[in-house]
Length: 468
Image (tube, rainbow, N blue to C red; front, top):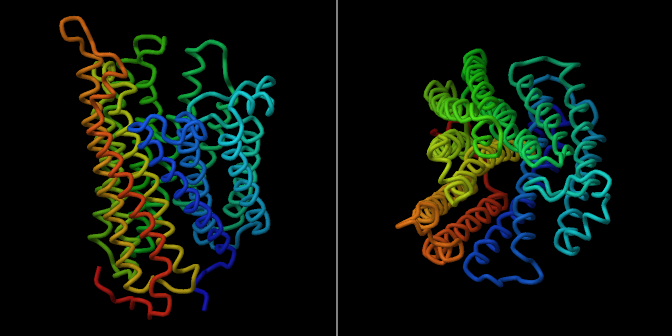
């Protein structure tokens, strides 16, 4: 028996399955990168470091976007109280996005990057070669087409149905995501302007409009799992997104410190970046407050764990680890070090990976005809949560230690003589081994999470009175 309120929500299952598959690929390449830090010629020349890193980061972006899209296709019909505008369009866009993404990754792996650039029209509009935005021109154009089709689909659904704060904030975040991506087509010859526009995409995504998506998904999950009045949750969400936009937009200045822009950005960037942990701390308070005030005991305890865990880890990664090196006098030494990598890993995992997994954890049992997975499956999933989260913590602490030692040896001269880059890297091997161990542990947790979908298929579902 179907528990879906609207049958068109079932299209989200395609996106969730695609996202998880790409997530596994991302982690496999991440472990390969960890090995290449320790064994320099590992995988060479078949998969050199720069290509493995491109694949790792590009898979992260693609699977998160796919996860956001799947979450929207599940959430919007339920919030709008109407069927999705076009299920057929949603399915076509999924396959176009998946095939284009797969071909792009194969292009990275099988064709020299310079050859790929020449073959895909980079001489017409030079957009390749920039970190996170390495995609060939046809892929970037394809992303725009898929994004516009997706936004048309969900916007028409919202317009013909009920308008809620959650759906409107999600829509604002998704439209902002698509529009800001257009800056990836802007590549001035002036390096300062180039980096400025590059940060318009990268920063204003992850520290701007993505936070709106995060807040709306978190609010939806809390509405569904706690039964707290929607009006209370809406007020919290408005407070969070206001702080997120004000601090996130002006906080872009912490990337402008040393790239040739006016010096006043050191003040603006420092002050507003220091305030960026506030919305993430508010999210933590929000989640715990709603769980404490819950009016029902939801049987899907695994989804509850991912939801609350997202709020906590998002604050630690995006908030606390971001604050550690956001002030300009500190960033002068830490910028581009392993401290940056520590922040990036924990922030992406805590804020965005976990909220997508929380949505999948909540929605997939319903898509499969039950309110929650059997207890055995939930137990395995909750173990997966702890294995993945602790492993990420090990990685982040290792990278933080590596970054501190790197700064001490390489960037703070002793007797006027700093250690060279490669000499410094050799001194960090202990931390890199720990980081690799954390990566293997994370992959183990992810495989446990995947395994939870196949455990207890014939068991009785957990009753709705299960303890929280």
